[in-house]
Amino acid sequence: MTIEGRRSGNLGGHNGNYNRNGEKRITYFSNSYVLGLTVVAGIGGLLFGYDTGVISGALLYIRDEFEEVDQSSFLQETIVSMALVGAIIGAALGGWINDSFGRKKATLSADVVFVLGSIVMAAAPNPYILIFGRLLVGLGVGVASVTAPVYIAEASPSEIRGGLVSTNVLMITGGQFVSYLVNLAFTEVPGTWRWMLGVSGVPAIVQFVLMIFLPESPRWLYMKNRKSEAIVVLSKIYEPCRLEEEIDQLATALEEEAQRKIRISFWDVFTSKELRLAFFAGAGIQAFQQFTGINTVMYYSPTIVQMAGFNSNRLALLLSLIVAFMNALGTILGIYLIDNFGRKKLALSSLFGVTISLIVLAVAFMLDPSNSTNGLLYGWIAVIGLGLYISFFAPGMGPVPWTVNSEIYPEAYRGVCGGMSATVNWISNLIVAQSFLSLAGAVGTGPTFLILAAVAVLAFIFVAVFVPETKGLSFEQVERIWKVRAYGDDSGTSEPLLVSA
Image (tube, rainbow, N blue to C red):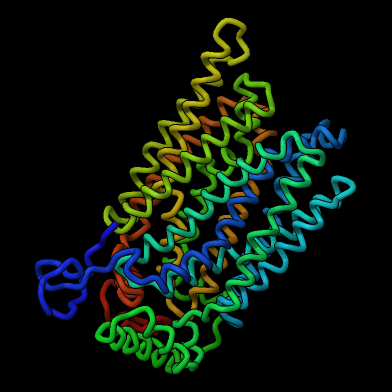
């Protein structure tokens, strides 16, 4: 994966590090320091993904151990959804924690809470203690979901920012894949689901230890007037000629914030036209990521496979493992495409394929998979529909919402707005997770997928109209997009909150 940077470099000869115009090539692997920051921060995504995936398999065995869970769809949905309730709270607080205490401390606090939650889940003597453990884990995941994309984005050159932020999404999908491997590994072990949930604390411990040795976000340091620390970190990210340009941009942003002399608050998102437009686009694409059904597929994929006529727990988990593997592969493709093809085109292409896939799933279930003659055929059509869905969703609507939300907000509001948009994502996730089994029971699985297909069409229209292309733009250039949309030109009118550079 090589992306040609648009910044001029040293013209000292034409070689593999420069293109024919003498411009410096920037690749995902050209700076091991940035790559290291990305991978360690991305462990937060791994926690997110593992928890999403592991509960789908563990739920099959929790139902076997607790009779009241097996007899209650509401309890099953609550065990899944309580982590989402925690994530909503964690994401809402995460924005404030990020802006007040920094990205590093936010990550460390998320790890501590996640480990506590994993211990409580593994030791739970009844479903209600288990639900409390799920709440704790959700708190950690919620904070991490806000922090990781922002931390990575602020340490990334703009030319490859999309791909590096998408690495966090790769960690999410990788975590889901690992969770299915763990689920399969523990299917024959006493205390099956307890091991599945308990080992989730291991990556949190690893991230905590590694994060101690990593720096704070350089942009956060600079905006907090800790300039010397920020420059030390920036010097490890950029070449000397580029370093000066980045420092100049940060100095301008700091000066503008000082001129505003206002207290950052949640209400600014709704009173400032620029922020309102940015948040509408960011929160909207986050909501549509969930309402098009991705975590329905990931949470309940083993259950969906069983609905399709495959009754073995182990076979259901094996087929779900294949779905998770396709999700991870699709995300790798997305890392390459997002900085080449662009965020908006990638999202639109993804949504088109998602719509078709959901229709395939709807048709498979509406043709009655329980039919004694054709049930197996329709079951396989449903499984193929799941695979197609993941193949289209993973490269586009998987990474694009998180990438867009890590780069469309001004520096002073990036934590607050990122936290609010992540909260929207988790609330949408909760609504889908809490309602899917009940809705499928009320109207049928096929019509439920048809409803999701209609939502995907609405999502396509939303992205086409409201989400701008941000490929290769600096944070300052993205800010100017919203000024132009809000006021019609770069000069602005009526005391805009955000001042263009």
